[in-house]
Image 1: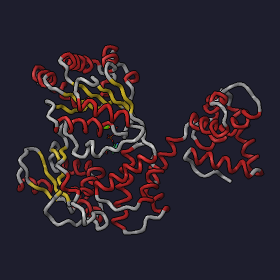
Image 2: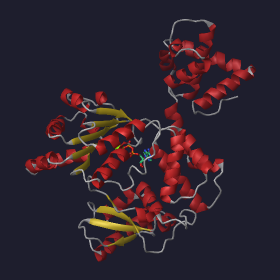
Image 3: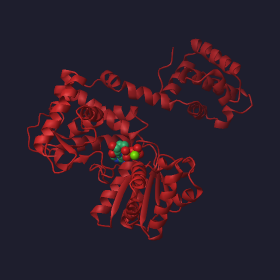
Image 4: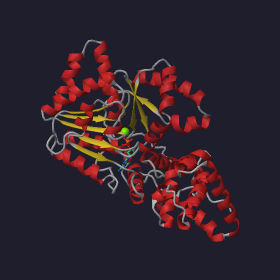
Length: 457
Ligand code: ADP
Ligand code: MG
């Protein structure tokens, strides 16, 4: 929309936003946004002072902005954040290094509501390689070098926030740059919606023409096909048509092929025809490297020990790792207070708590305790009772009771015992700890390994 209209729309949205947030938040985060004109109808371009604002707003305020636009009568408008290169930069002083080019220069607009847009930051250059993703990264590069010849299809799976979208979009950027043919990046959900719309509007022919005439289909979150018969059918034909014509297909999924619920067998087998590769959570070193790379990319100034603290505490998900970095950076720049351990613990308390909860499972405890006492995991559940096994088993039961929310019978079950055994073990270890300081030390150390709270002494 043109500039005049954009400013009008934005002013209306601001009226709603001013009611929704405190005056402080409004002036800090919303007041810096300006509406700008563009050529795209149905799109509102908003400029922000630098990349840090862009990230923070996208991460925290996008839903609220959308809602305000909806309340102002513009529900279906697409929002594009653009970093304002020319304007004054009321950037928080510690955030942008003055001797470096503004991160803004490296960014393009990011458009929402439009399926299939590649995030300009999801490139191979920005992708940090560590042991947990080396293989997937190498497979992705091989496909970029020789589409439809290296591995076809390429199927990348792994839990959320581990870099699947980043990697598949990096392939998209690289394939476009190298001019390897028509690239289509889409999510399975968008593909599905497009299909439904095509059916409703009797445009199935053009839908099929579109998807069967591309050279490289990158389809994100294919697990969305779970339990959806109709779209599985359509995708089966798309897949066949592309594959037979030696076109490359790349898919990501948050679980292995075999665990996508009710996936037709013929799709299961096809998805495993080429290369299947898994991404796992990266190790501590890689997490630090990712935080450093992100610090550089965003021009944030935070000392290394702070990055280490974040990397040590946020272990399950790279998206959370980035979120934590932004949170800490924002706090540092807005309050200018030193980042003490207490401040960091407070800032990241929710994330840390979640991490600890996810880390501590009955099986996890059994494994850590078995490792510690150098016995086999199977000994935890075996019927044998020699003391060198019985004692570690009691320790494990004690920890299960202390560190998880599981019921006594559930814990008993995990050890092939009943709830009374667990209760007895818990009491017995608890009593011994009162007099045995080395046992207290052992329990504390095990709890730390499990990422849990300090032991009651
Ligand atoms: P997924 O699709 O697996 O849920 P994403 O690809 O969206 O995860 O990754 C979550 C965030 O973590 C993104 O911002 C992404 O850029 C970042 N990220 C993931 N892996 C890496 C990596 N190896 N190097 C740098 N950033 C990464
Ligand atoms: Mg993803």
